[in-house]
Length: 193
Image (cartoon, rainbow, N blue to C red; front, top):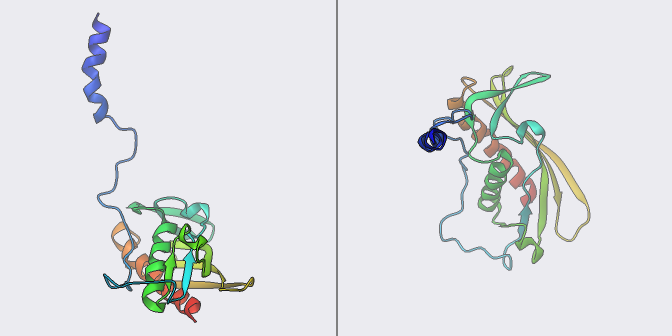
């Protein structure tokens, strides 16, 4: 008789016990320098279109944690720094906003691209974090582009380095965001030509 009573008494405490790590006080995200004005109409009938795929990433970026290249052969992660969503999705969204704002192209989703694929941009996000040796945020994107009415694949590497004051959660997001914006501008200018 005591066992069921003890189990019922312990049940409210089950919500208080956690075996996971304590979450950070806030989650990190990117801020686009370029954006499309609210209410601006876009049509693939009157403007060029592009489909931007979420880039592939190495295993070190397939996490919400912010990587730090500690040495040429080792990676650590910034303490108490977590992205709000996977870095590849954050970068793809930033790239979409920048592409539309700088080129006037209509950026399509994967589902929309079946009707009007336009140009197709894909690639690999090779680096999206901090480098301890250079005290900088580093973003490296290897892009692949198939332009409209061609079967030729163009490839180009884009890279940006932004100095960071400290390797910590407070400094990480602004510096990585700035580097990601620089890369997004380079990619948009390349695709937009």
